[in-house]
Image 1 (cartoon, rainbow, N blue to C red):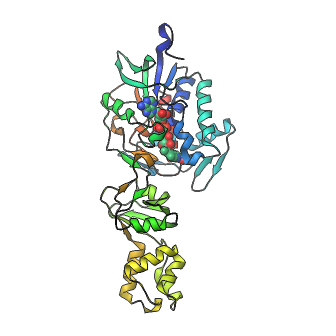
Image 2: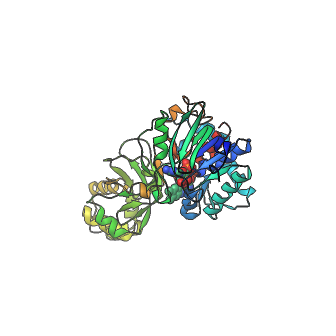
Image 3: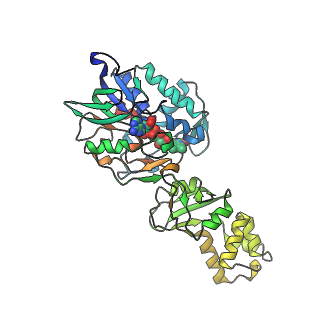
Length: 397
Ligand code: FDA
């Protein structure tokens, strides 16, 4: 166990705080360069967030990952790291460990068991010579001469380089905390505003009863904010407190408090044509062929759409199309960090080199992974960012 015995036992070339996706990748690379590397984490096992990713199957990368898949104040920041370590490099890693990758469409690659991915990363870092101090409480980190010192409940460690790979506070159930931001700030690295991302949205009092009644039902939608150019497509799932599902989780990346979202409940469907095709049918029944029946019934009651389709006036048809293609939903909030897959915002990328992940004004200090103001959409982009940024820092730390 590092930190337990003599003289230089506690002196390393590289100290990495955080044994998550980014920290493990960085550790492997540093150790492979012959750097004496120590990874410190308070978890008893490395890669705890990897293990729960993708419902335990881990959507480990996306073959289409590019800068446009990420939210970051500097939209070019991710380019260099993504080019240095691509999704195909990660596929090579999986093949080296005989771990299958399953193509689930839209570039999304899943492992069979996320646990195997975490363990393979750990094994590979160990085989390169990286050392680990798990179950270790980090108390402080500071500059120490030309290097850094980290105080823990297992002693003080010194390193010529320090890598902050502590992630964000999303999903605290697996040991996520905001310590990384606090440490970064101590080194003068400010953070951009942080909030839960890839998170379910809660319904206000007007729509809460509908969501509760519809719990478990899902439908394909397109969600756009009332201003801005983003849109998110995919399935929306009703929950007892609001809405979730891929389209909603992605919408949470651009939604802001108080904003109304416009939800197209029938993307690509020509409502007028559907009504024309069944002129004698009750509106509720026509809509019931296009939407979940309970939702169709609720909409008809809310907007007083009744009678046969053929009786609908032109004016009311226009109103119906507007309501169905632009259903207004003003979330009362998000389900919070406990249910958020990521933390939006983070260490300001203006202060960090996009090529090396080194702090521009603090030589030897590196920030990687979710800790940075880089957030990917749903679909394997966040883990790819962790691998790529960890790899980039691993060439220089
Ligand atoms: P990560 O959080 O992995 O690592 C940080 C490490 O620091 C942890 O090991 C933690 O224990 C340690 N640490 C934190 N605070 C500490 C402290 N105070 N003291 C000591 N150690 C401390 N992404 C994706 O691409 N595909 C997917 O399928 C999913 N699925 C998914 C599901 C769920 C439920 C969640 C919560 C998240 C995902 N993600 C995902 C997101 C993805 O898991 C996430 O972006 C990366 O794991 C981030 O990697 P990092 O290494 O940056 O942080």
